[in-house]
Image (cartoon, rainbow, N blue to C red; front, side, top):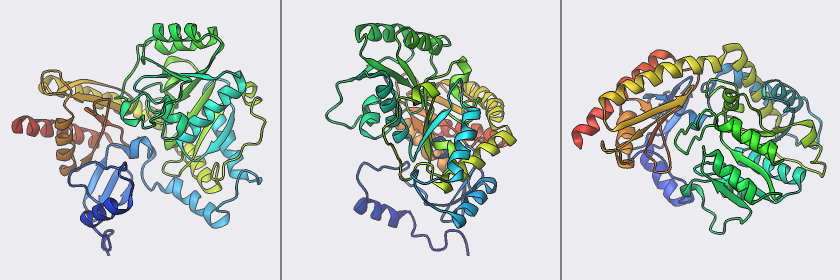
Length: 417
C-alpha cells in the first residue's frame, strides 16, 4: 500500500478546512499538495511525489524529518511514561535542563519548560517584570514573537498584530537602530523591564542588523539596568551556523526564549536565564505539557544529534555555498534582489524588476518551485521575500538543484510578465 492510499486528497481537505477551521488558518499554494509522509529533507504527498523541504516547517525540522536517532528514544519513552506534569519528579525534563545549560550562551542556566514559542516569550516577559518590578517592554519593528496576548503586542509585523486593543506598556523602535533604542530607554527611564528582539528577524524578511548593533544593544541594556531578552525560537539550534545566533556577535542575553528546533517536531519550548534572575520567580508556576517526558526525550536526542553531526558547522558551510549561488542569480535576474542570510537562514527580495516589492510574483515563483519539487517560504512585511530554511541535514547537491530550480522559475515568471 502506498503512503497516500487512504488519503482524502487536497480538494476534500480544502472543503473540510473551509467548514471547520478558523478562517485565519491559511495555507500556501493555489494548488496545494496533501502532505502525508516525510523523511530526511523530503516531504511526500498523497500521490507519492517527493518534494525537497526548503522551509523545515518554519525552521523546526533542523535535524531532518522522522529522524530515527530522535524518534526512537521518543517511542521508548512513550511506551514507558507518556505524561505527568511538572508537579511530579521525572528524569527527562531534568536531564534536558542540564543538557540545555551546556549549550546556551553566557551564564544562562535555569530553564522553565513550556509547549510553544509564544509561551516561552510570555514567560520571558513575565520573568523580566518580576525581576525588575517595572512595567514597560521595548520591542523591534518587524519582529515576530507569537500569537498570545503579550507576544502579539511585542510583535512588530502588522499582519501578525491581530489584537485590536494593543497594550500601552509595549513600545517599538526600528530594528537595527541603536540610536532609536537609546532615545526610547532615556525617555522611559526607570520604567522599562526588558528589551526583546530576534537576533536575525525571520518573518520580518531575514533581516540581519549592522555588525555593531547587538553589542550596542547589550551595552545600552546594561547602562539602563534593563534586561535583554533574545527570541531565538527561529534562529536557535544551528540555523545560522552557530548554536545560537547571538554568538555571532559574542553577546549573551539575560533571558533566552527557544522552541521549534529544540524538539525537532515534538512540541517543546523553554525560557532560560541566570541563577540571579531565576531567583525572582518564586511564586508557584507550572506547565501541564511543559517538559513532557516524551518531548523532553526527543529534545535530548535532538541535542545529541546536533553535537554528533556538527549541524551548526554544516549550516555555515552549506549556507555560504548556496548564498553565493543566489548572488549569482541576482546578477542574472533583475527581480531577485539583495540575497542575504546567515547559515541556512537565507532570503532574497522578489521585485517587479524596478525595485518595488512584488508579492504576487513571489507567489508565482513559489507555485512554480512547488511544481518542480521544491517547497520554499515567504516572509517580509510585504510578503515578497523568498525564504530558504531547509533541514540542516540537506545535501549540497540538493541545494544546487534548488538554485537551478529558482533560476528556471524566475525565467518562467519573467516570460509570463
